[in-house]
Each structure stands twice: as C-alpha cells, then as structure tokens.
Image 1 (cartoon, one colour):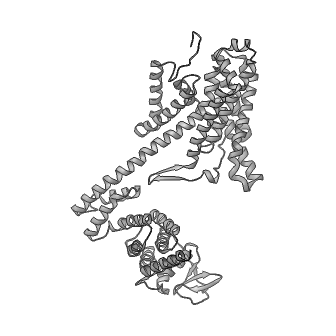
Image 2: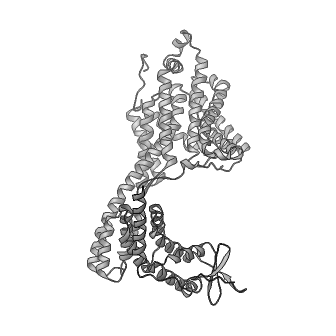
Length: 532
C-alpha cells in the first residue's frame, strides 16, 4: 500500500514537471484581457494562457463560468471564499462601484469549457482526465491549445486515454500549416471510429480546403477506414432497434395470442388494456413521488404487478359482462370490443385529460452502455428486451405446466369434451381472458418507459399485434416469438431504405403474400379433430 502511494505521488510529480515546464504564471493583464474586450481577443488570450499550462488559470476559468468575476477598465476581480482578489494575483481588493459582472456569450462559454477541459488533462485522477477528454470532444478546439495537449499526450500513462489523446491531437494537427504534420495527422485519424472524425475528414476534403495531393490521398484512405468502422455500428444499431421493437411487439402480442389465438376472440380493445397498464404505472409513479420520494427509483417494481392486476381486472369485467355472450360470433365480438375501446379511451380522457402524461424513468433505467462510438444501447430498451422474455417464459410455463394451463389447453382444443370432464369452461374463459388482458397491462407498463403515455397509446400497436399473431400461427407461442422479432428487425431494416411509412406498407405486403402461401402461419395448430 505504501509503495502504491509512493508510485502515485511520483506519477503526479512527473506529470507536473512535464506539464509545467516553461509555463508562466497568469498575470493580471492576461486575466483582464480574458475577462473583457472583444470575443475574438478574449478567446485568443484564453487559448494562449491554456497553451502555457498555468495551473492558476483553471481556478480563474471556473470562476468565469460560475459568474464570479467582475471587471473595470484597469483589472479583473475574482470572488473566492467570501473575499475579493485582483485576478492573477493574491492581492485583496475592493472592486470600484463601476465594476461590472463579466458577460460570457455562448461562444465564449464554449471556449472557457474547452480550456478548462484542456487544463484538467493534468489531473492525477484518471476519471477526471477521461471526463475532460469526453468534454473536449464536444467543444471546438483551437490550435493554440495544441502545446498543452501534446504535453498531456507525452505524459499520459493510461493506454486508453493515450489513444484518445492521440486522436484529439490529430484532429488539431490536420489543419496546421505544416504539410508533413497534416499528413501525419490524416494517417493517424484512419484508426478512429468516431463520427466526429468522419465529419472532420469530409470538411478537410471539401473543395479548396486541403491543397496538398499527398495529404488528400491520406484523408481519403482514412475516411474510407472510418466509414467502414462506423458502418458496423450502424448495422448493429439497426439489429438492436429491430430486436427492441420486436420485444415490444412480443409483449403486446402475447396477450392477444391468448385472447385471439387460444380463445378465438377478436379483441379490438386489446390496445386499450395496454393503455390501462401504462396509466396504472403513471399513477404508481405519482404515488411514490408524493409519499415515498426516497424510494422513487423502485416505483417500476411496484408498477409491474399493479399494471397487470389493473388490466386483468378490467378484462375480467369485460369478459363476464359482454364477451361471454358473443363466443362463436367473431364479427359481433369485433364490433363490441371496438365500441368498448372507444369507451375506455373516453374514460381515460375524462380522468387524466386528453394530453399525454409524463412517466419518468428511474435512475437505474436512465443512460446506456456504449458498445461503439456511434452506438449506445439504452438501459430502458435492454430492460424491456429482458422483461419481454421473462414474461414469455412465465406464460409458457403457466400454459404447459400448471393446472390452469392444462384446462386452458383442454377448453381450446375441445370445449364440449372439457365440459363433459367436469371443467368449468365459463370460469376458464374468464381466467384466460384476464390473463391475456393482464399481459397487455404489462406491455403498457413497459411501453411507458420508452414512449408517450396517452389515450391513443394502444392504437399504434393493435394492428401490428394482430399481424404478429396471424403470421406466427394462431395459438402458437413459439410462432408469436419468431414473428414478433422477425417483423421488428424487418421493419427497421426496411426503414433505412424506404422510410417509416413505406416500410410499414412493404411489411404488410410481405405478410399478405406469406399468408396467401401459408394460411396457418409459421406454426400450424396441431390436434386430433378433422379441422386441425
């Protein structure tokens, strides 16, 4: 432990010696030039001071960003720890009455943030240096800051940060006056996989920008290399967004696979049962915010069973009051459930208003994991993919291994025989319909984490859900999985070529052709009856 501390101290000292060699202390005149005057002159003075690597500049720049600097015609003043000092010195002073607060426009604030990021490259903390590099990548840099970056590059010991510094250094060198250094930078940028580097290379290749033939050739090679790397990120992004959409369709279609696939009920109110689950999540969120704010991040865990029970209860009421009288009459079932969907939407508008409501992601579902420079997988999407397959596993287990599942399968295959064997078919119908409605509520809970929650939430998914069930095969959970993921990936793949609207039309045409060739879907229902 002692040896590790000694090594750490030695590393800090070496960084300090490298970065402070030849530097000059921030003077009062430099501070005044940075704080007052024309924006171009202020930025030039700031970049010159940052290039010298003065450690006192960081505190002054932070004070500028915090609006803690005043200025008059002679000098600038910094307020720290309740006292006022002349900027660039340790002399206490009382600002004159006519001293004014420093005003920083957006351009100046961007230059200040970039300079502060460059100065943070000397930090002994690797996380601070990494954060500084991330911040520098977002702000335009000036050639005057190149000496400081080169010193930091020479002193950096972390391999990953050194590679990032090399990329940052090359983005500055590619526009310097020396053609040899531009050629070196253009070649180095070919190893990058950053979308910003692609834009930089394209700018340098614009007509009249880069005149040296050798540099232009190197820029073209680097651009092709960067585009190749970025293309892989884009392909992976399309696949992931397709799987994400497919998992949402899977959640939506699972409930419909039971109510339509197993029971033969064309439930046009299925989307509104999803909406009920989403609004149940909204209510739970507000309850946690009002009464349990310290446990707010756990509200989703409570919203999951609440959304399931809310939608299942509404489904049970619908089945017992309306749908039980319409079994075997699909057209009348369709019309009745369509009317019920309109009633549910109007009820929600009356209770919560016609506008969308805000459902906030908990902290552990915010952000994402970066797998490529142009590809970030959001945590909420990853959670929905995992949640969809957990729900699928639960439904499959319930259908195949439980007494209720046995009864549901028996009633589905031969209702009269199941009734003769003593099965209460009316009760099983209620249970099955409630289960399908509850799964729709779970889909609404999941959708609340990635999209808007409003009275029209279910309308955007009901048609796609029916297409998934029909394509997969009526009553087949395996077919539902394959169809949902397949349609999700196919839809996102086609969107890249034809746009969202034409992609929907093309997917619909593909499904129509598929159903014409295979009316029973991917997986046909098997049974002993002549119809099967």
